[in-house]
Length: 202
Image (cartoon, rainbow, N blue to C red; front, top):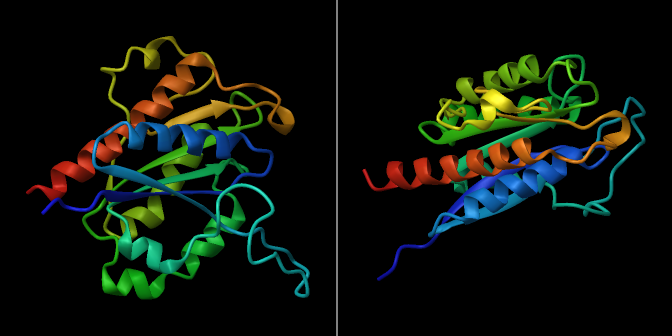
């Protein structure tokens, strides 16, 4: 009997579409590995107005993540635009609501990676990636980066770091993803899926 495909969760928030495009490239890398499926999910925006609510189904992009997705996934790719060198508040709000999953070890021992997009070239790509790792480490996940066996890390002028994939999107997402960033983002998804497979076979 064949084993079911591994489900790799690609969880992201995107305001102008750049991080969503990166999530789709991560998914492409994941699904280039036989036996692995990418599950694209996002989170709703949050508001200081208590009466403001988001629709149950987003108008565009992926469906909203459910806490059960964390338990069911074999790995996690986590993406956010940069907000003052940190992840966007809707994602922080989501992680703040995962205490039960933390106590139960729903993500412990699973591989994870991070990715981001910034409006300016030096707008906090690396600090955002590093701070995004913090809740994943608290959940007991194993963090994957990009090794320098990828030559694009030495030539990129638009994004891509050893800490994870990144993209200089420009204001309002006006810059297309460069060839180097595209290659590195897909490679990160592939590395995540391959690692998830190796961990399952142990």
